[in-house]
Length: 256
Image (cartoon, rainbow, N blue to C red):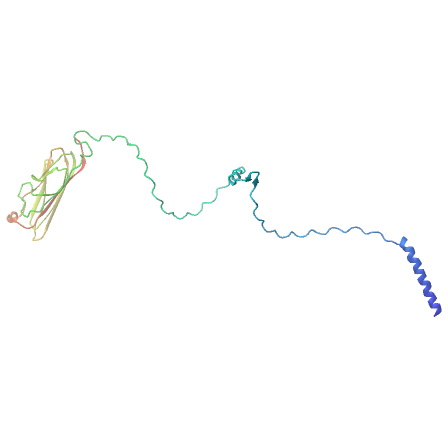
């Protein structure tokens, strides 16, 4: 055991000697710096900041109108967009103020010559009715009319004649309702032959009508008269109700 302990002591001394010598000659070299790592991911966008304070000049706040006037140059015009849907019809607005009167129009042109050339005079119309129960006399002008229209009095109610005042084309017509056979005709100085119309009673109401278009000159007359055809002998003594309407009016004037 004594020999073993001595051996241990020798080994320990040897290690101490070797350790002191390596502090100078056994040191290692420094390592190189490591490479940079990969960049990290971007962070989330931050929240919107609060609105800044208005710009301030030396003598106070900046006028907002001045800021609006400090606009940049106008950009190029963009393409026309698509037409949008038709909007709803708005409410009717209030009536505007009346406009100022327009200028007078040019004078009109004359349409004819003579005393009846004025458009204001180129009219004539009448409508008369006879309700007398007596039978109108044969070959006599029918009279005893009640005037419905007579403008401007070209029909003479006393004589039963219409006298042309404005030369032109006229339309005349009559209608008759009776309970007896009756014949009536339109007569005129403008006709070579009178136009006769008849209706013969068979113990029932009779309706008789007739009409004509005439070209009249100033002074020519038109009238209605009864005439004998195939009526029975006692027809003129009939006292039943009868109605006759006689009408006439100017279609258009034709100055002579």
